[in-house]
Length: 280
Ligand SMILES: Nc1ncnc2c1ncn2[C@@H]1O[C@H](COP(=O)(O)OP(=O)(O)OP(=O)(O)O)[C@@H](O)[C@H]1O
Image (cartoon, rainbow, N blue to C red; front, side):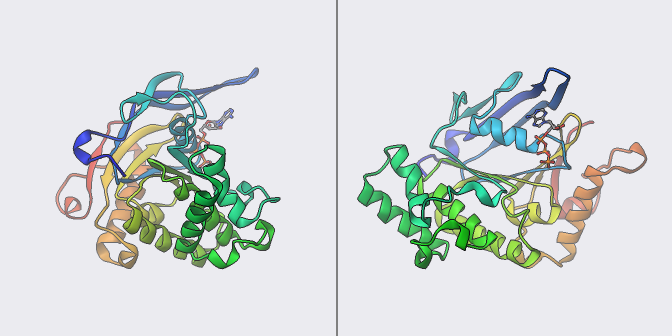
């Protein structure tokens, strides 16, 4: 990581409107979404199905262009995918099945000409070791469990030393225990590598555990509902009163009752979560 926090946000998302147009219809996925991700942030996009989380992640990845507004990485407008933004998806089939685990991790390093074959192998083995899979380097992906495949995908992304790691519900298809372990491992990797993370989830608990900041989105089209600081929570806080309170608070933001706008900044709530709520 070469950027210093004083250099400004790493990712700037400004008034982004994303639309999909098919022959039959036009779908507005996001409306006027703005947020900043700073170097070293673990920034979460949280919201119900259809609020445009994946669309925003794809736009940050350079896989789609917003109808209006813009996304910039370190001041340069994002117009296409690039090796400095690596993506990890939810699906277990993101690893080409004809390549071994090692070849899978080496592939982006070789394809982007970032490393010679020997360097790529060394880096790939280093990151496979970090995710606990060095012994599986010569195995084919179909012989791995879902969690192991996700670990390979994470190793493959981190091996590129990206400026930003983009993760689209990477643990959503895993069983609860594996999901918890993977969250733990991701946080341990972050402690070591301090990468900048943009992470999509629809789980409030996962957002609070994995994130340092949460952008809460409301659906149809996706709008910013609130921004919440949550760096104080870790895996050991799951059952704590403060954690439960923060989770309830986010739940109320996502599902306001009687159309009322919840007020997060009143009284005792501020002791648990620092939030900026945006008017609906
Ligand atoms: N390729 C596409 N063509 C047309 N509409 C799309 C396309 N991709 C997404 N959409 C629509 O855009 C909206 C936002 O979708 P998106 O996948 O970004 O939301 P999401 O919050 O990630 O949802 P989920 O949690 O269900 O994945 C939805 O209404 C969806 O139907």
